[in-house]
Each structure stands twice: as C-alpha cells, then as structure tokens.
Length: 153
Image (cartoon, rainbow, N blue to C red; front, side):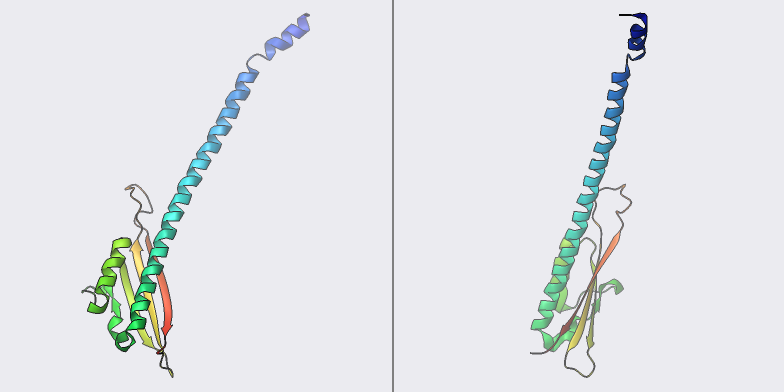
C-alpha cells in the first residue's frame, strides 16, 4: 500500500457511520409522519361516526313524524331555547343525547304552499368528544341538518 492510498483510507474513516446516522434521522421523520397521519385518521373516523349517529337520529324522528302526520305541528321545537321536549319527542331526544354529547335539536315544521305536504327540517348540534383535555378541537361544535317533505298517503 502506498502513501497516497493510505491517506485516502484515513480520510474515509467514519463516513459509513455518518451515512447510517443520516438514514436513521430520515427514517425517524418518516415514522413520526406516519404516526401523525394515523392519529388524524382516527379523529376523522370518530367525526364520521358522530355524523352517522346524527343522521340515524334524524331519520328516526322523521319516521316517527311520518307515522303521526296528524300531529306534525306538535313536533316543532327548539331545544336551545330552554324548556323540556314535547311529549311526542321526549324519548327521541333522550336517546339522541345518549349517543351525541351535549346534543341539541331544532325542529321546524312548515306547510308546503298549495300542497298537502309538509316540509320538516331537523338540525342536530353536538359537541365533539375527544377525551383529551388539551385537544384544541375538544370544544368543536358540529351540526347536521336533514330536510324532508312529508306528504299524506
């Protein structure tokens, strides 16, 4: 081995270790990104589940109203204004609040002009459930609105 080759080998010492450390940093950044993406997807799934629960609750109420078309006016109610729920929807509201935290409902019943049909609008609002006190979105309020037209059969 001549002096020039020996000099090159001495200059190359530790390069593999530096390359390994850089590769580990890149891998760590990638893994952190994957963990963050997983956490966000779980939050999105939770929000989608709550929207499904709100849709099911609204559809249940529309089913009750369809079966009781003679008393549609009794279903109009705004739970944000205080006061208890009308007797016809008392159980429905209790069930809705059991699946959606802090749920409120605004139900409007409007006759359709020049028709025997009635338009029903149900807006359900709830507070997002995160389980983490430091979560910035813990107080996020979500709302879901369903509009249906009920016509006598």
